[in-house]
Image (cartoon, rainbow, N blue to C red; front, side, top):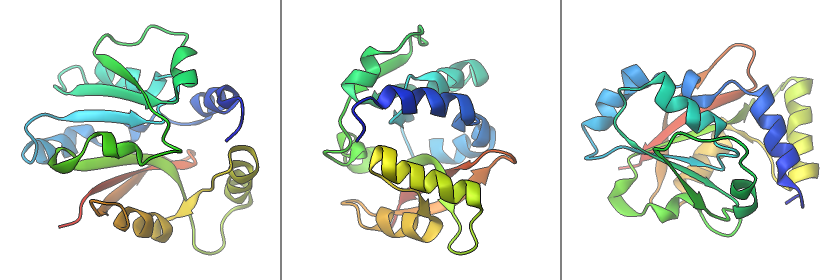
Length: 180
């Protein structure tokens, strides 16, 4: 991992469409609510909290707990006032599975905002992003198949329900749930 994640954090805030504007909350929340007593939205690797902070203002009627998870150094560097409903949680997800903090049946759905690479014939700009992630952050982007395989291998296996994209944005929102 880079010694200074803040350069990456700042860049991602500027170039990405917020995940909360890609995911169809109005259509999906009723079905999620029927399976959960309380909705908890955890923005894992949530950076400065900018995207999570947009959620309450975009969906003011949404009754849920909001948790921002990121490295301690990233959370300390937050420069804006976040919505008071957002609780920050320092977590080093390079050491452990990030969602283990919310064990058991409490995890019903997981939203992942990432680039989904094509298995073949990927565009040059998206392939370059994958290479940048490798060289600068010691990580990589994944294809949908790779994402499915990694989600199936966690302690409580997950499966992908659907993905949502916005034209012009490199990233997609992946919705996953417990595989039953």
